[in-house]
Every structure is written in C-alpha cells, then in structure tokens.
Length: 206
Image 1 (cartoon, one colour):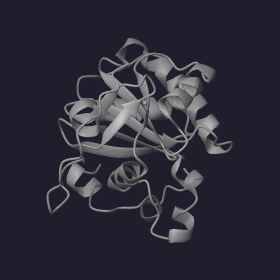
Image 2 (cartoon, rainbow, N blue to C red; image 1 turned 45 degrees about the vertical axis):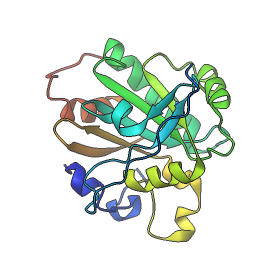
Image 3 (cartoon, rainbow, N blue to C red; image 1 turned 90 degrees about the vertical axis):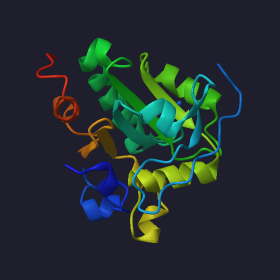
Image 4 (cartoon, helix red, strand yellow; image 1 turned 60 degrees about the horizontal axis):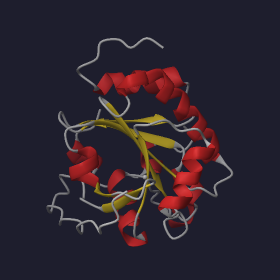
C-alpha cells in the first residue's frame, strides 16, 4: 500500500509491473502549484460529462474514497471492456456510489472528448449516478495523468494511449491509502480493493 507521497513520487505503470493487469460552465480555477516533493494532488481544472466545472483535488478527491481510471470515447480496445467491468463494480457498490465511494474516468483524448461526447459515452454504456467522466485542457490532463502514475517510462510505450486504460487507481485521501487494481480484474476483486482502503466498511454484499 502506498502513501500519497509515494504515489506521486513518479512511479510509472510499467515500473509497478501492472501493464498486463466527467451544468455549470464557469471556467474553473487553474491548478495550484504542487509542493517540491509532490506531496499532494494537483488541483487540475476539469469538466464533468454534465458540463460542470470542477477542481480535481478540492472537488473530487479531498476526504473521499475514490476509484479512478483513464479512457477515451473512441477507444475500441481495453476501454469498452474496462467500462463494462467497472459498471459491474458500480452495481455491486449500490447506494455507496456517489455517497461513500466516488468513481471517475478521465479522458486520455481531451482534444476530442468534450463533455457532450463523454455524456453520449455515459448514456451508451448505461452508467449510473455517482460516476463522473472528466475532460479538460490537454496540458492539464497530461499533468494529471503523470501525477496519478498513468504513464510508462518508455516514451514509445507511453505514446500509445491505450496502454494507460487498463488500471484503476483506488485510494482513500483521508488516510493517504492508495493502491492499484487491474481494470479487467474480477469485479469482486476490484470491490475488495475498494473496501480495503475504506475503513468505514467491514463487508459489502454483492
């Protein structure tokens, strides 16, 4: 289990050995500067698939249990399968989603994936409430991708967006407990990983 400090220390997905395994349209604030040791998440401005302006840390992460993956609407490889699998996790979580556990999918293709495109994706995949699909400025998304560890140290592998869609970053900001799960793992395994970082839960029935 990594602390948030360790998570942001620059560990890429390949180094972790897990490659196999998004209303209000007011412009959000710019990201705050991170401390020199990278000890907290950037406050990246984003838009949800409902068109609402949010800030990554203050609005989406602070004090929450979260599950985060990356995808893009035109992806025909891992993304649709990962979305379908996480939809099963959403069903298993039931009323906890959007109340106790928050699910986020961040586009890897923000230059194309507008809130409207992501909304259509949400509708097409029958995503329920409590799971936000997020987009923003390309440079901001790229910074966020690296801060979350969705990258590979090999630039050729890193350039392939599909290589960053197979992992879910799961964490509890309050206790700085962060881990990973394969996006295509059994839904029960992903649920167990979420429960492992959520100190308020002893057991959740499927």
